[in-house]
Image (tube, rainbow, N blue to C red; front, side, top):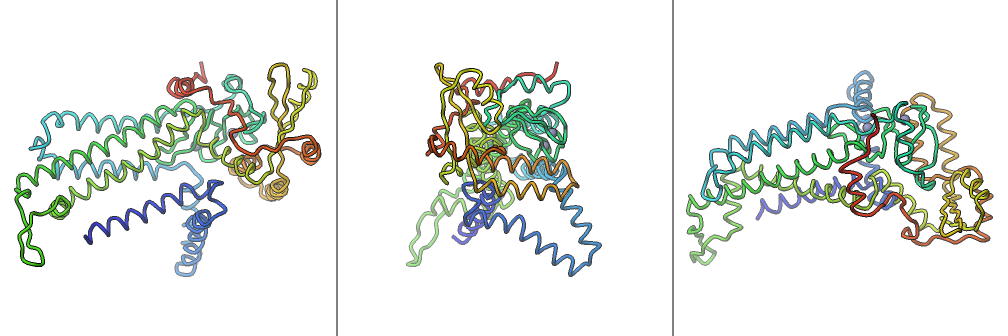
Length: 438
Ligand SMILES: [Zn+2]
Ligand SMILES: [Zn+2]
């Protein structure tokens, strides 16, 4: 019982920390206790460690640690790739020395002798492909083609230039401050493959997730079968224990499992580890697939969450008016507005968040003061844009305008995601992405 309790507590704490690290920055959680815990884990804790380091080791060592921290968090680096390869290779080696000689066994057929190497080679291959593939880098040559690929919804994406690359930013793209380039249909930067995930390699990333999930589940399944085989060889089904009254009772399946995990510690630990990692990857993979079939990238999902937060705060207004084509053109030029033409009627959508406008101005002032790192600023600016929902300068004027004749948006579902083209087209767009070059 003790072992099970210890494992449950350990897994719960680990799961909770992963949840805080992943979900803390989300608009849904960042103002609550999860957000505070995220700030503690990612900011305060590091400040404490830095302070303690300076006290104990002096400034020279702490400066070296600062440089290391910057290298780990603000530059592309292979640290997590090495961690991934070490975990994968270490697990395969442990499997080889503890489990391989049990194949074939009472519950494991000989065919697995051939399947195991194929699964291993497949996993390494998808990792290499995902790590080395081009995510969809925007260059001077493909800038125009990339811009024609997706239209600007003028809500999440407005026409503008990247201040670092000095190239036009296509809709759905984002400048990655780690890779130092703009990526078409940017999803996210994955430190595990030390590469961005975007238009051209999203399929390889999902394949890599699937391969890792597959090797974990397959490994856990084989270990389960091998342990069952060991139990059979040891005749554990006939084993018994004496209870408190001295009566002989057959041991339960749970007691058998505990006995085997104790008996075959490395094999048992490997099976639990594979099962746990497989579960975490399954959740992430399902989240990725959900985003794909709903025509959203991870980057856009954060923007939608921001927008949802603004709507919940009652600060998102739709200002609709009928206008002819010339009026539409002038409306089109207004950044921070979205114009849809439906059955001869043009609907102009404006969004207003007075509270965030101040925040944005403060951020811009800070940006002016800090001119050191252009790449960093570009990423930050995009994040600010996300929080702003893309508003521009003439908001106050629009505010009064729309409050007079506008309609308050109550739910996110009232706003259409123009990039969602239906399940099959969304899937096709990821599996067979359009060419950026050539
Ligand atoms: Zn850029
Ligand atoms: Zn990147």
